[in-house]
Length: 171
Image 1 (cartoon, one colour):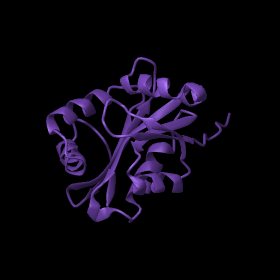
Image 2 (cartoon, helix red, strand yellow):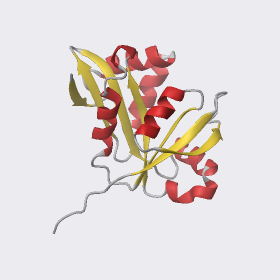
Image 3 (cartoon, helix red, strand yellow):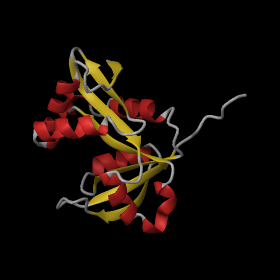
Image 4 (tube, one colour):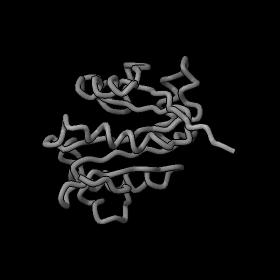
């Protein structure tokens, strides 16, 4: 397995979309546009896990800022926990092909994404009925902040947060 940076112009972009659509049963055209839009957001960063020439996993995120669609949804829901919206990144997508789950790929991808972030905190959302994802995030020191989050879909989501370790700059 090799880890490569996520690039919308890269040779693996269409394969990443294919995996995403396989995992979530969604329209590829809509997802391609969404991923391209996200790649223009401040401090966008992402990685792909490549096995052979196939995308086996992916992760990406960006700085969460006022005016962004999801930032505004999260802000309304985290009124009592406003500090989570300050200086934070959104971990937007993390997915691993079922054949590679339970082998450390998600942990490695997330670790690479979070290791040098400039933000103090990170947020993510996951469906409340996805217990394996919730258990994974809890094992990686994410905490549940709120449930009852319905981001314009019929499914209930939970919001999770993590304080990021920031390396002190020398000099």
